[in-house]
Amino acid sequence: MMEFIPIIVLVVSFLVLLAIGTPVAWSIAISSLLTMLVSIPALPAYTTVAQRIGAGLDSFALLAIPFFILSGQLMNKGGIAQRLIEFAKTLVGALPGGLALINIIAAMLMGAIAGSAMASASAMGSILGPEMEKEGYSKEFGAAVNITSATTGLVIPPSNVLIVYSLASGGASIAALFLAGYIPGILTGLFLMLVAMFWAKKKKYKTGKRSSLKRVVRTFVDAFPSLMLLVVVIGGIVTGIFTATEASAIAVLYTLILGFIYREVKIKDLPQILLDSSATTAIVMLLIGASMSMSWVMSYENIPQSISDALLGISDNKVVILLIINLILLFVGIFMDMTPAVLIFTPIFLPVVTKLGMDPVHFGIIMVLNLCIGLCTPPVGSVLFVGVGVAQTSIEKVIKPLIPLFLAMIVALFLVTYVPQLTMWLPELFDL
Image 1 (tube, rainbow, N blue to C red):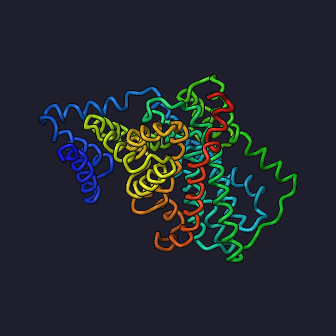
Image 2: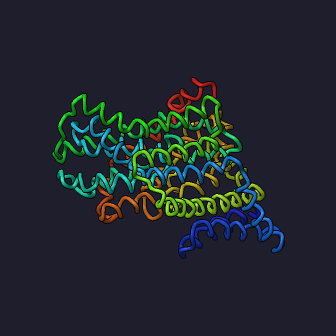
Image 3: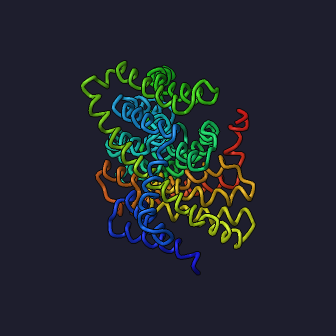
């Protein structure tokens, strides 16, 4: 019974702190400290937790995060979203639910380029939301499509969360993770498109006109410089020209130049862009530091080993274990933001799945795809709140059209879980 006391203290204190409204980062840090106080005297416990928070941020790979956040802010202000939407219109505007499909494709592109689900939800919702309403789409359906499609960019690289997973896993290749995310991210987007088309046909929403080849070419040329960022960043990482951290700095330079060329970003806008990026970076880094301290505390108390033994004690069947892990992560995603969830649960579950012969890269994509669903669920779903706020509707009204889109994401998740080739084909193709 004594070995379970640290687990009980950690879980109960964390849940109580969240329940009384303590910010997530402080809930993680305080519950870590309380767990340490069970085992060691107060002064060493305080200094250990503080040291682990500092040490958790002492990583060269983490430098990529503030740069990608800044490049995302520059893209959001730089007129890139509008150009991607215009290009997506020419591709799928004439299909049933055309505007919903445009939202999904543009969100996949925007999310991949900007690396931020909230930036994508905000940009797509504010531009496409009013247009969808004008065409007779319900506000709630538009919001539901926008919320779910915004998360696909967290799987399609470049992705800050995949960099965080690489750190938490003890060194899974960032280049391999980036390549592994393409097919699962696109697959999720395709499932969302199928649901949107079915819903649009059922509700008899309008379809747009077929675009001429001339318009397709013109919008593609207009969007081409934005799309090239993916080629520059991912191509450079995969070919070994630069690291993920160097790629993030290049992304900032590229998007800054692009913003000036498009004349959407001006010198006077830069102080506010830098301020917004710094605020977001501070929040993310505090979450990372606190989560790394909790991971260390759990390791010190031998909690991952206890959970691993308990899981493998239930079954040694890979299908069953992966089902249990997915269900736990789906539940965790409802209450916890993605970054701390990745940092806390990777050390717990990764040893279990590697014992079953799973590649850490494959598990990383499963984990991120799984936790993307949590971003769309109350009470903590950040993308849900952004999407609902932009659409000026309520969570209660959005839930009904969200459910079939949730199911589509879950189907994609289980396909990616049980068909490893969907994830591993591209990294293996490039020998990563």
